[in-house]
Image (cartoon, rainbow, N blue to C red):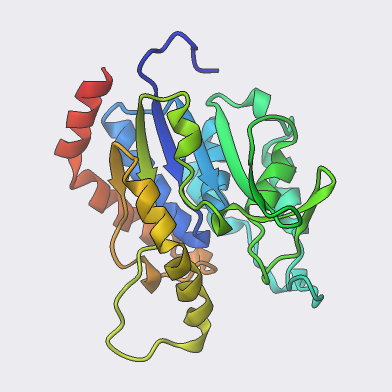
Length: 262
């Protein structure tokens, strides 16, 4: 675990966004090259999953391969029920495979995961206990996945109420970097029907994300991310490279922040 003696901790908040969360890996690559490894990580949905793998000690390239090979949205997981289309079995199998101890307490970097308690209408933050259940709760996209039954209630995607969880980091970190992977590409022509839900969901969250972005000491939002589908994991390599180039182009800004942290 990171030493509690640090007085100037760097926190990293990672948004959800399905396959687009490969953006965070591009940013992490740039941060590593500048010797800016985060002391604490928070995340929603796919951002929470990236955070868990990174906090557990997996290398960036390993995480990228896991995302591409996981087949989390395989058609064989379809279950046509009222609450959602897909079940979360493949997620749980994946998490237990790579996190056999299944506990926040075994992570190398402290991790905070947001989810939404849909029955009580409130945001919940997990930072201890059952890691796989917490990740499932955070990444349960409404109407796509069935709500996750955990701790006596039902949970859906953390991004519904907080897709950039910076507040939890401000309690323990002097500096916070926010990484958001859902910028909307302006379309000159009609948007396809299969893009409508995605664009509507992220446009609805836009104002709350903007407010949280203003709380960050440095904020990263690669442009035109809606060109990538949240369900197309085959584009992870391309997204990663795209984000890395945008992050490293802001090297001077990051170096200035690093000077403050040190």
